[in-house]
Image (cartoon, rainbow, N blue to C red; front, side, top):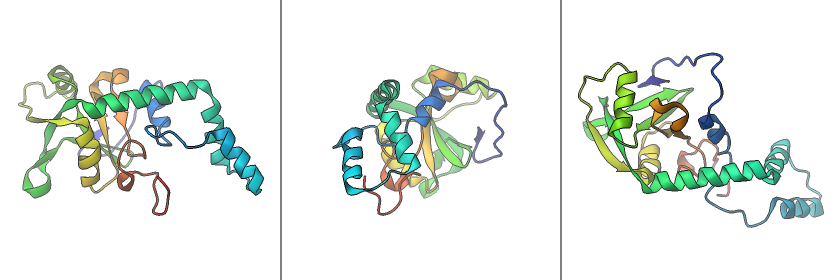
Length: 195
């Protein structure tokens, strides 16, 4: 992960973390329950003579998997907790809207992430990892929901939030997908899609 849009080179052979599992589970809304079950939808499609696409078959199989369903519920609970919690967001060096200092961000694979921290100790761990422990860190306290609902769409590029990114598997990534960020800022939303 590189700060402020620099080159991105991920380490090779690094084991898959819990964060990657959560990110993979966000291909559909997590906060909204479907009005029909996957079985009912398949029955309706069969009556109409429509064949599901490969992606729909994979998604349907995932919904039928109790482990996937449990992970989705866990992620929905974590997302809800993040939305209700004030977090620390350091200010970056570059200007943001209105020529004020912008929020500290990092780019990874073409997606910008706003860096947020659960407390000052988490921010200190990040500063130590970056070799910038002695520098003064100016930050704002922002509600998680405000980051996802206001700051992410205002970025103007695909953007999510990374919480406690120096904490490895104890951190969390909220990618820019439906159910996490507003539809207009989600990468998996196209005009004409139903929410």
